[in-house]
Length: 306
Image (cartoon, rainbow, N blue to C red; front, side):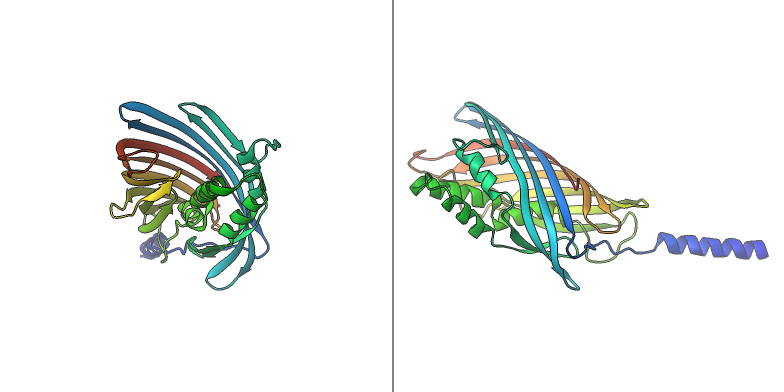
């Protein structure tokens, strides 16, 4: 009887441990700095008026997040780009833009270099969502004002492109895709939850991801995500490269994430996106009558904290 009683107690303890709920969240320390180092590649395939037009793209970036202050629900972060680079293989040849270049004749690299170590602020929730991004558009404008050789329509176009890629909305979505992976309520191993994220750049898309806590190690939480991606067919045309454009795209994404068990900061995030659909360019002086063409995109990215 004693052995049966002990076995019963052990079974109760085992069931209780398996059912234990964990609160996954950020637990960051004031004045500490956390890093996000990203390497992303894209293969873009499009056919315009029967002409195949493929683009290979590689983007790398190192971003630091310093905790300026914290309260019960929010972290107030100073964000700095430490380095930025973009390599493109276009149909008419390669393009290489790098913030670490020291070449005054390379204006785009010089502008990227001027963005480095120019702080802006972001407010994070404990679940990794970004409540707001502030001062970044002013920072971009200030950087461009430092290049008097860039004036008039060229300056306006470059500013619009940088805000589409690095503005508050674009930054919010791209960072949240890596950090906003925690549920609002406690979960157990193998539990699932859904997170909605909006990506905004040249293309605005809604990402609906079902995450699952697949494993718990002594140092990490292991999370897997499966997502659906879709643009909004009712969105207005956006100006991209000074042309009114609209994307009608759908796709999927997978994400494999390792989060530090103590801080909640993402140690590693690997994502892969496959998106396809059409791009519509409205009638404009550059393309009279407009055009609609098919496009597919495969994105793969790896983000680490070191």
